[in-house]
Image (cartoon, one colour):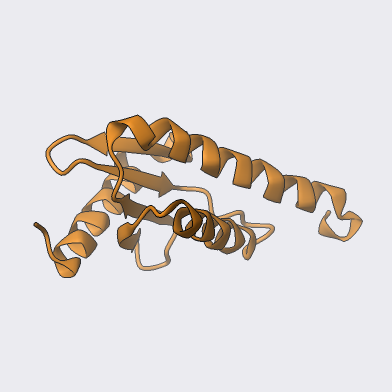
Length: 120
């Protein structure tokens, strides 16, 4: 079993890979069979609404907690934090659920921004 620092290193590697090789996808998930984990990554820090991604992430973490799903590691890349990767203790059968959950949270957050006349 990997230790917390090992998951953090793995998350850092995933964040770097997402930033360098998957940048155009903006966000997504990967399943790693060898570890039986899902990685959620995000390359979209919302330049006009810098707090929005943190709000999405906080809501996602709360939903994971409610579902009883454990976050194993988290990292950003580069130092500016433009991209993040989260390692989630979830099997392949939960990958689509996690992707859909983040999509729903993102759409809800974007709806709040577009409904707010002061956000333009």
